[in-house]
Length: 287
Image (cartoon, rainbow, N blue to C red; front, side, top):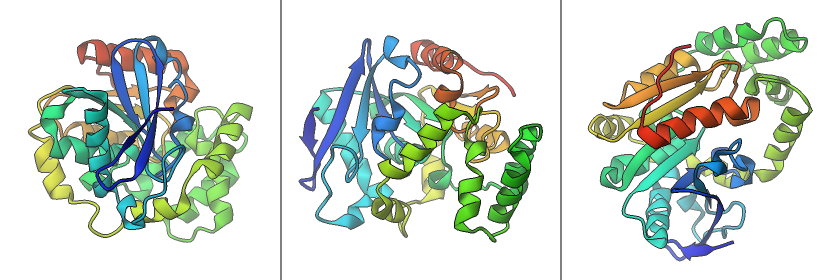
């Protein structure tokens, strides 16, 4: 496992797997061990995946200053990785909360990003609004699932601010296109992989400047992919369309039957879409 040193002296780890041109991958969580990304459904057949363990996660050290877990302060870690790899420009893939870091890096260093793939991206960095109905409308697509009724009741409680810890557990099936043994194991592993202290600081005060970030992204000229899951209650399709619209050269792909972890739901479809984008910057579809 190779390591490098961040500007503040923290030792950070990354993992390289696969064949082909390098693709730097930023995990979500927030602040989850990058191991959960795995081979991204087999994307390693097309690209060398470089998975960064964010500070305090996976093989990376806990920083002396835990305030440095704040998302904007980790932009320097990504830039130091680019320098470590000797790359003039990065092709960058980010999942979920990792998209916040990718957006801030792209806004700060637009000339150092080639293609940008945002997978089920979180929207905090760009300040887009997701309504309760956005989430519930996606959830109702699953009304024929055997687990739907109690999960939907819990989702209503979450969207109206009445949630308990049990409600957050109950809505887990909505995160996946199939609530099967593989999804259950994936969900259970998440709890062990996340640095909760770091997650609590990730979006703390001062982390994001949505107006400034949107303005910078509006001038970003390189190809962008926003890939959304049809069923994803965390990144509803309406909002993902809005996210894609922030860029001058973005395409939206909506993966049918997928939730928040689309490479787990349909490996072939996910890899086909992402590889096509990375190869030529194309790939736009509708729900």
